[in-house]
Length: 234
Image (cartoon, rainbow, N blue to C red):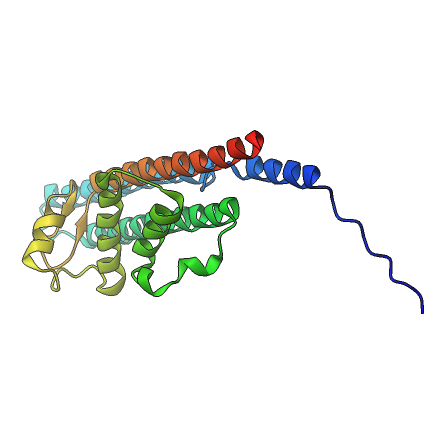
């Protein structure tokens, strides 16, 4: 019977070299920088379009009034208002998707860097919302420590997203405390029957997301740097 030739294993020194190189390659941002900057550009472009549409419809209504029309046709203004609402709802939903992707990628990078079991993401004691579960995982296994205010702003954004997605923007289910908390956000009006989101809130939310992502990237980069440093010392 022919003997099966056993393949030679890579020497430990080469394995260690490959591991360090893999860690260096991994030491990147959780999100592509263009993902953040292009979204900023996209928001500015949609705001320009909304302002142009609004100005055009206001001019049209004004012309009707000046011509003596007692019941000017303002249906165009209603259409612009609806368009604006849907666009800004979509901005918020997308920003939250960026947050979730950032945390997913951060957890994956931590698992690979520290050779952790992916099942650690789903123990009973970490049973929670997807957002909080990822936060606890990063804090427990990566010693990722961010100031509470860095977590608070994204968490508020997620609350807004949930109302937009699950309640179609209705404010009917908001508690008094919820109304108070959300009412303090710049550019977020909840006094009517549904959320009214102004450009100011989108800018505020975008800034908080960008700050959060950069903080996470810095923390994960520090973990990878420590592991590379420890590897080089041995």
